[in-house]
Image (cartoon, rainbow, N blue to C red; front, side, top):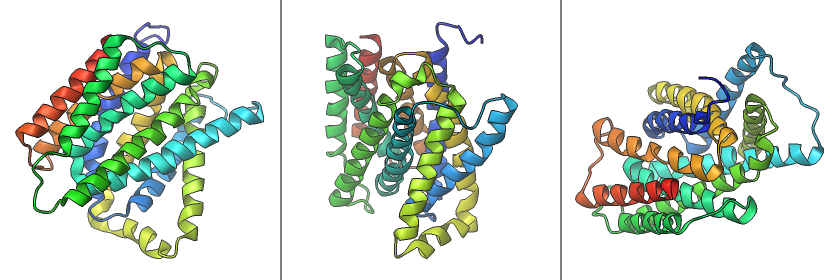
Length: 298
């Protein structure tokens, strides 16, 4: 498809959703044996290693001469999204499972849109406001779902909190670089965020007293295949097309399309992970998806 296609941004956003949904399932399996911080550190490093030859193939420079302020914004975006946001996401995923994480993940769209309205001067219609309210209502429904025996109410609420904070960090991270993406090569933007995400998390790991146990969890053979697969699909592929969606269309349009990943996650969690699904689960995902549609078409 030519790069001047009017639908390129939307298509990239949808491709990101599909890739991320498969990655979430793999990361959930990986999280059974690998520490969330170690998982995040590994995925950022491997994605960065894969991205460098990709940039060489497309003749993209590794270092660009841009104002220091713009460098700082991209680096800060990487710390927010790749270090804080993704680590919190894995912590939430481990606690509440993929299907509930899919519902909590719908907070991403309202966060992106509200921040885009406030800081990027993008408009928000009444239908979009209703959509945001529906998404928040679906989130409240998850707190009333009958819990499996291994999930306490406290564990559920903590998992939801980690999920909300994860979506907030990710949203802020992308909104602050949105004005710069129109004049920035896509692969370079991905590279600089991964660099920030990896090295900031590496510093944190080195300062932790249990760093040996954290890094050692990566050596578990049982979970390594899931970790590797999730990284290839979720960080290397999904991250590039996700930023592409943000680059080639409005953030408030790309975000709801990204949200369709939650539908795929919900279905895959039932089929592959055999997570229990109740009527409230289904109602919550329908309400949240309806809200995302209103946000998109509103």
